[in-house]
Length: 177
Image (cartoon, helix red, strand yellow):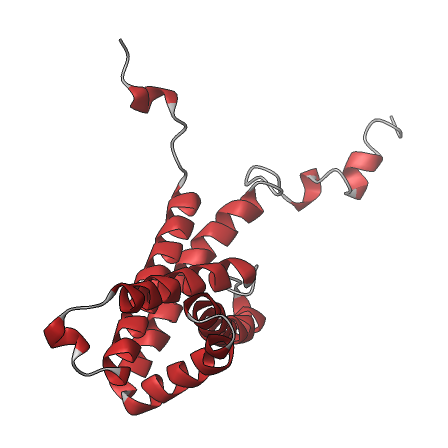
């Protein structure tokens, strides 16, 4: 019997980079959620986490991953416009992720307090805010790998400008001989 791994399609480099970006955002969002839970209840670390506090941490991770998915192509674009879009995407992932995580954690009040708690947590620990910013910079680079791979599907490397189907040389080929 053949192993099951041979039947599965292997992921490309860009797909692996995208999956790693989602994993990175999910884990780091859950980490920020854990720190927020610890700030709200200092005894949570010593007494152990309750099921609700564990759900808040899981909801934070899910919120970050869903926000990265909803950010679309804001992350990973090249050039100076891509850097500005990445900055907007980082703000989007941070606050929409907090909004989604807060809503999952506590449906009505969490929607309002989720972004507020994230801002207070990041302002209360500047090193955490810096780590979060570097996390999103890494996600931008990982998504850039995915975007580059996705763009090569539509413009093959073997095709240069003169060989493009829309070029004048291709339109006039064989008509003047």
